[in-house]
Image: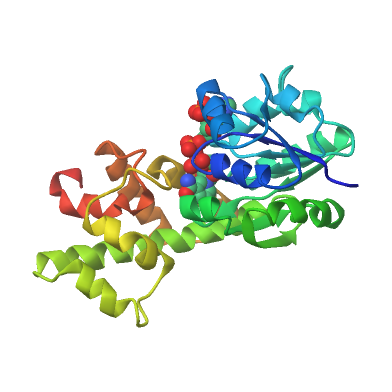
Length: 294
Ligand SMILES: NC(=O)c1ccc[n+]([C@@H]2O[C@H](COP(=O)([O-])OP(=O)(O)OC[C@H]3O[C@@H](n4cnc5c(N)ncnc54)[C@H](OP(=O)(O)O)[C@@H]3O)[C@@H](O)[C@H]2O)c1
């Protein structure tokens, strides 16, 4: 199959720049966003077309990419009279970039294959900056043949795209990613909070320890904004709790213990109670700075 037309549903923090990268190629791009003003804004910045429903967006596309919030959001744009499945061409590939449950991936693979098309679960890592710079890491579940075709498209906004196994394997790999991030962010929050309480200059501390064994992506990309208490960007706490719920439920079903992840999930609940649901997930440090929040 030659990919000529692609569609992108969901122009949020991540989808907006990802679809933007596609518009910089020779591919024809059609976008859809529930809040139409966001799609209009996208068209003022990038070249392409917009459609009125997910079904219309998918109608001509060889590959349909999707990046919305959670399992229910995915179902609401895939199913029904105006959903993607109602418009998806036979033989087309639906790529779900949403971080969702492995169960949803298996459900969608069945529904999409019954419609004569292919499905890949393909959650991403690399944050807002990774989406904007086209340097995401993408972990994929599904079959090899559609992966080989879809990889060429995903390479437009990714630096690494890997097939991890059958449907659901991308989401399971993303759960591992989120488990690792939760612990690192709590450790970084405690370290930086300790530094400011004992009178050290956070930026000077990070400058030196980021050259040693404490270095991490979070330290490189988030320590400066954590020092300034800036959280109005990035990966929302609400989304992090959604991801940790998936990881904890999957672990529970598999009889796996995730004590640190469960604890950090409760800390994120404290941040939500502080009004930080849309703050970047590095806002864990605010819980330490505000004793009332604990
Ligand atoms: N932000 C990050 O750093 C990051 C990193 C890795 C993975 N992710 C994952 O990527 C996904 C998107 O994250 P994001 O940060 O881009 O989220 P976001 O900025 O909140 O955008 C969510 C998008 O989904 C749409 N949407 C939500 N519910 C919908 C529904 N029921 N029907 C139709 N459209 C709906 C929203 O449309 P409206 O504009 O109408 O609200 C918006 O376009 C999430 O699963 C998140 O966990 C995010």
